[in-house]
Structures are given as C-alpha cells and as structure tokens.
Length: 247
Image (cartoon, rainbow, N blue to C red; front, side, top):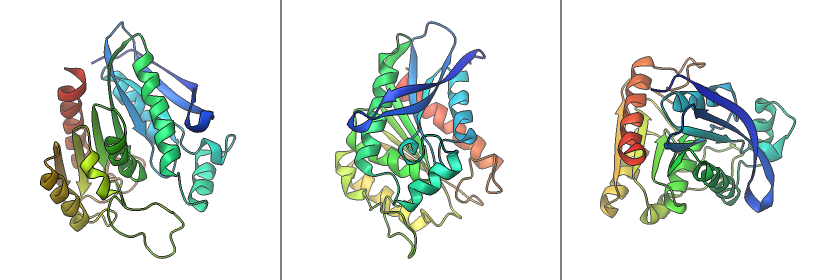
C-alpha cells in the first residue's frame, strides 16, 4: 500500500477533439503501476468520486476521473452540471466512449504505467462500465449497481439511455458486478437476467449481491451507505484488479 500520492486537475482531449477536465491521482514511486479509470455517478464529478481516485492511488494505482458532464457546464458546480446533463437526456454513449478512451490512453501513456487499465463505474457509471467492457480495449471492468443495462426507464425520467445487454456478446474483458438486493435500478431480477446472459455467452464474470443494501451502498455521504457491504465490495474490487491488472 502506497501512502504517498499526488492528485491534480488536468485536461485531456476527449470525444470529437473536445478538451475536458479530469482528476488524476497517482502514487509516489517509479512503478510500474496499473491504471483505473473511474466513471462517476449521475450526480457528477463530485467529492465522493475524487475520494475514490485517492483510494486507488493509495493502493498503488494510477487513477483518473474524466468529467463526463464538462460540456454541460464547464464552470458549473457538479450538481448544476449533472442537472443540465440529466435534463438534456444524459451523456450520449458515443460521447462517453470517446471521453473514456482518452482517459484510458492517458493512463497507458504515463511512464509509471504497466499498460494495464481497468474501469469502474457507479450508478449510471456502472452501465457505462458495462458498455466500456463491450466496446473498448481494456483489461478489466467493475459495474457497481449499474442501472438500465436491461429494463425500461421509469415514465417521466428525462434520460435517453437504452438497454445494452445485446452488446454482451462483444465483451472483451473480465467483469465484476456488485449489487444490492434492495435496489430497484437494477432490480435483483434484472441482475439475474444480466448474469444469465453472460453465462450463456461464456463471458468471464463474477457477480456479488448484498442483503440489506440498496442503490449507492458504497457512498459514505448518503443514508444508503452500508459499511459491511461496502467493505466487502472494496475487498473484492482489489482482489479482482490484483488478478487482472496488477499481476
């Protein structure tokens, strides 16, 4: 475990050549270190997400958090940018993939990098982590309660995302899924549907479900936080990345 780390706001060239900001945390030392691209939740590029980057850096990972809502409010607070993004239908999948590709390339370009990069996403970011696993050249993916991989959006929700389970046949890296049994988006039945399809396709995956936990059980700033589930989830994340990225 690396106790020394440095973190800065940086700029990367994302989808369509747009310059966006990102948060980059890295451990002190020569490495080589694996990389993790952290996909923020719908509330945006907030303190809870940058704390996740710090945690990965303290454990010996290069960690980057691209601001997927940058175009919705370059000077706005995370809350206001997230609200604007939500009102416009959310982050389009192609734009997300372009921005994440830039973040992954940035990690691999660092002289401390071992060239292996994983992604992890929470909430809407969980769906996007699943999408990345099916679309990009990455080495491992973690989906933390990603909604709308399957299923319809509730009536009145302004998001325009669509189900993406049909892309599972293209999945090109191992996937770890962490879900709460009290969640509605995704529901336990939807998680079962995703897992059944991955099994049918023979994809490398492992899913874990937590009793008494709902959506956002990792988030220490919310009432939904469940310490036991989160602690076990973090243990599984580092074990999973240790096998697929750090070895």
